[in-house]
Length: 406
Ligand code: TYD
Image (cartoon, rainbow, N blue to C red; front, side, top):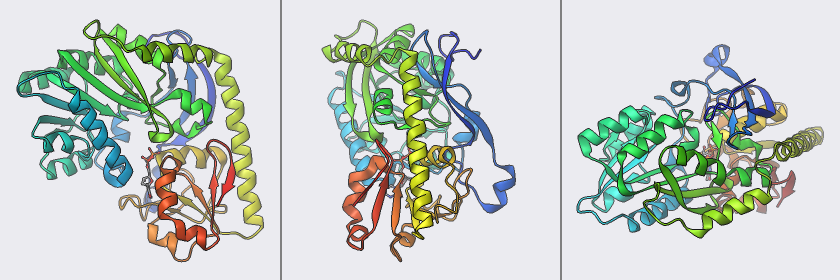
């Protein structure tokens, strides 16, 4: 029996994807032979209600000098982080010279907003290339994983933080015990800890199984994260749903008992009870929906191939790695995937080895169909790709259901 990484209870696996490559393991031809695979399996813990994957590659395999994800690559996400930073700054506890620490600061997109307002700041980013991009724009950044030990050193060198922020990072950290002990140590007595991560409630509701991949060690619910934070002397004081990443929650946390708790938290907990997020059967039903979604998508792509249509993927997202390999999408079914990230262009998708090309290749000439892997940026992409539709191109969507859209 596999044990919960957080509470030690026996977990209940509910969805096995088989051998999977790293979601961001875009690779070159000469690397095909050494490609790394691990068994991807999602499980539910009846002890603490945390949804988790039962095995995760070593963190250094995922977040290293060639991590291909840069926050600044989406204009809307950059605006979202600007808004997030402004909200955190507005709620800064009174302090003469506040310090803001960002865990997983990537290329500094959000940290730059604090720095721009003249605040003391420190980014923590283990991926060397992203950390360097942040330093190049003058942002103070340490290239390490956030642990209790690092928190101790930050306190020694910089003092305690008034605000700690983390966007799409906490759910990546397998050893959350060390990270949360670090937050507790680093955060001032009346400081705020803000973090935003994909919400398991949205994943279930939208059958967004593609949120399950190596980097996502956990999918948080309000109840599972509240319980965990309490074990570390912290408390969720507010939750706000966010549209990012197809449905996320922005949590505000503080030292336990330090601040009043918003009524929203209790409302979320009630809703999660109604949704039966703490019942194993809920996850079994989810698995059935995933299997149906997979079968429909595969059938659609095969029909299009038989009809001689050109199909490409749009957005070489981390999520696409799960979809492509789970649905068995091969180069027969998909010509290439276009992506605006220079580091991904010229590589091949993990596992299925579908070529990743530039956005220009999408335009000349347009394909007949485009499978929208970057569905979380749907509005932004639809707005900018009006020309594709005008030329008769059609989008293939798979979240929340498989279908075509004009
Ligand atoms: P992201 O939203 O972070 O998804 P994930 O967390 O699953 O990786 O990544 C979006 C990807 O899509 C990224 O590689 C950039 C690419 N992209 C485009 O190619 N064109 C676009 O217009 C947008 C918004 C993103």
